[in-house]
Length: 237
Ligand code: NI
Image 1 (tube, rainbow, N blue to C red):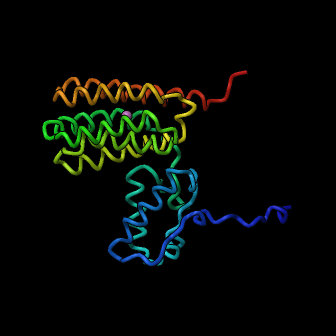
Image 2 (image 1 turned 45 degrees about the vertical axis):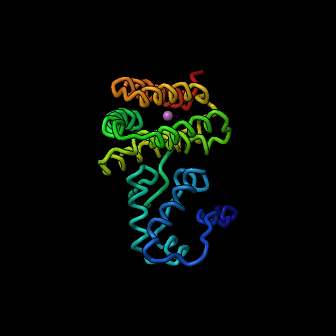
Image 3 (image 1 turned 90 degrees about the vertical axis):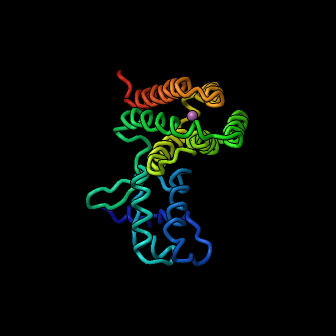
């Protein structure tokens, strides 16, 4: 047995294009961004093993920036380190996704508190443009990104950069989930009422109102995840 199964396994990195040599000081961020978009758009599916040597060869760099980029992606929940296998692309939802949402609320509420008094008209314009674009966008990948940019526009003035890094990690996890599941969850129109309400309270500098809307908004995300998990369960006979 077996010989018939020796198909040549497609190199998972073959979908990744590298344009020319990368300056050493940009290597980490270029590798990180390239892998992030390949994971988010599904070119690197869940469970794909990501080998440091193969990446170093592909990008023509040493192992060090590769290792740093992988560590960043791991901290954003896009990669997981599995024993004996190394880094693999993380599943769409982690077992602790609901806990992630609970933490996201704490972090994003605090980011709003710090950022809201410092927002200017330009920030509100940026957030408003995201909503307008979300209303007509049909590409689920772009919807995921616009949702993240909308939220980041409201949190972005928070002076605590570490907080913003944690906030971004939660939003990236959601971006990936939205991209794959928006269609079956039918979240499209609901989301914009939430976003408009958030923006309205933000514009009025109503911090408590804004945080309340955020809680409702994230709760809808939790409900969507619960529905998704239910739908993945094998049907009872
Ligand atoms: Ni949102």
